[in-house]
Each structure stands twice: as C-alpha cells, then as structure tokens.
Length: 397
Image (cartoon, rainbow, N blue to C red; front, side, top):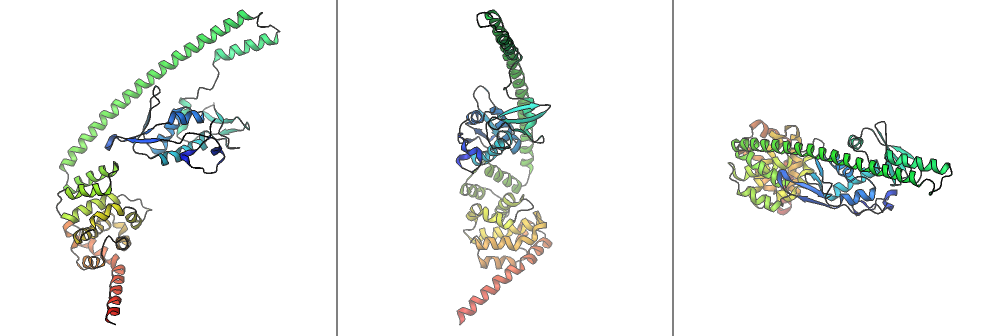
C-alpha cells in the first residue's frame, strides 16, 4: 500500500507514513442540481485496498447526501456542494474506522465479515479490530462485502492439490486431476462472473428506476414551490432568490447588485431585511448573532455605503431580533455594536434610529417588538452618548 496523505497535510498519525493521492473534488452544476465529483476516488480506494463504493458511500452517510458510482468509468458523485478539505476530513475518519488497525495503526488490513459483524485483520501485527456495529456504512458493506475470499472452486482445487502432495503424487502422475480441477475452477469463476454481472445489472436497473422516480418527484415539488412563490410576497420571493445565489456560491458584490435590482415595498430597509433574514434567520441556537455578523461582513458591506443603507440595516436588525427571533432580543446591542465596530453603521445613525421608535414600521414591526429591541439596546446607546459627550467636553476645553 502506498503512503496516506490526506488533503496534503501531515497530522502525525501512524497511517500518514503511507502515500495516497491527494483528494481532488470538483463542484459541478448549480441550484438544485449542484453536485461534487470526487475525481480520484478510485485511485484513493485502490491505495486503501477498499472498494471505491465504500469511500463514496461513507461520504454520503456522513453528509446526508445521495451518492452515485459508475463502475465502468469510475465517476464518483456526491449530491450537493462539498469542498475537498471537508471530504478529506471525512476520508481521514473513514480510514480510522474502516482501514487502520485499531492496535498498531497500520493501514494494511483485510475486511472480514462474520455473523453480520465487520472486522479488520491487520497484516502486520495480526490484531483483529471489531468495527463499531452502529456505524451507518456497515449496512452497505454487509450487503456489498469485499471480494477478498476464495471461491468454493478455488478452495476445492487447493484441497485437491494438498491431498495430492500428501500422497506423494508428482505433477506428472496427477496431471489429469490438476487439469480437471483447473477446468472446474475456470467454470466456477465464469459462472460467478455471470451471476455478478446479472446482479449488477439488476441493481443498476433498480437504481435507475429509483432515480427516475426521485427526479419526477423533485420536478413535481419544484413546480409546486414555483407556484407558491408566484403567490408569495415580494420579500419572500427576494429571500428565495438570495438563498439560491448563496447556495451557488455567488460573490457578495454580485449578490448585492442582484438585491438592489429587486423592486421591494419598503426600499433599502426591505432589501436589508431580506438579506438579514436569509443570512441570520436560521442561525443555530448555540451560535452568537454578533459572531455571525462578523463572519458575513462581506455581504453586508455593500449596503453600508450611504445613510439609507445603514439605517436599513438597523431596521433589519430590529425585525430580525424583534419578530423573527424574539428569543434573541437580548443580543440586539451585541449585533448593533458589531456593526459599529466593523464600520458598517455610523454612531449618529445608531442614535437617530434609537430615538425614532417607529423606524421599523415600514417593515410592519409591531410597536411592542420595537420597544423591546430599544430596551435591550439602551446600555449600548447610552455608552455611545456618554462617549460623544466626553468628546464634546474635551473639544470645549
């Protein structure tokens, strides 16, 4: 087996002593049809001495995505957009779970299946590692075991050869028996190959039928979604457009240009609100909104070039934490401070927004929600006012 070098990085583990091609992945398509082509999956699997279907299926199990492997061409597809670094991390996990010896770390192991359990027998130290039965890939491996066992005909042939050797029969005296055994082995291998081809054809037909059914269902759902979108509000339609652009990896500047071209009731505030809803409306419970704002600065900066855009963002924050995520209303001052620290919103505009209680009425934010946001933001606003007052006193002196 050659050296394992995942993603080109050396993590110091024992199996990095062995060479393996650096994982190459190319994202293809866009929108609902976006997919990732693992270009050298077959070469990687060959280096690991595992079927290429195993590594590809493992990616699918871990990412919750469908996969497709074409045996003839070796094309390995994972649905969705996944960069090489993420796939390399998953490949490292696959090696630790399904290749590397649990005792000595040697990657030269043989997969053994016994009573619905999967084991790895190390060629170096002989240790037999038992794979965790709860792993998702196990079901696939049990249904598609590796072809590393002798056929019945081969075993019988080896037994006959051993018996002949034990009886002292040389090649000349047992030539006929050897020829017969070889013929039987050849016939058995041919039959096994035919059965395997038939099984593969049946599996492919089943997979094709399932793919056709799924494509039909996806088309139906897409039509229904389009119909609903046609009846939806302009803001919902704009949010749908933004999500598609983000999913396809559209650059911030191009996304901003598209958003500015959309006609939305409410002008800059409505556009900023649509952007904030898409970027931060689904933030996980454990994540801080202020940190998410810092991480998405590139998408917010184009809307901070003028006063209208800055006020629009403050109103968008008001709707986000006051209406969409009311449980996060206490984070309002942290989000506004992040915008201030990042030079996305100026001090005087923050103070102007705070004093105008109906600033978000253009987005139909209830008065109670606007009041809650301002109550939460009061400490930061008072800090700004004190800092401004201190600067004025300093100037007078």
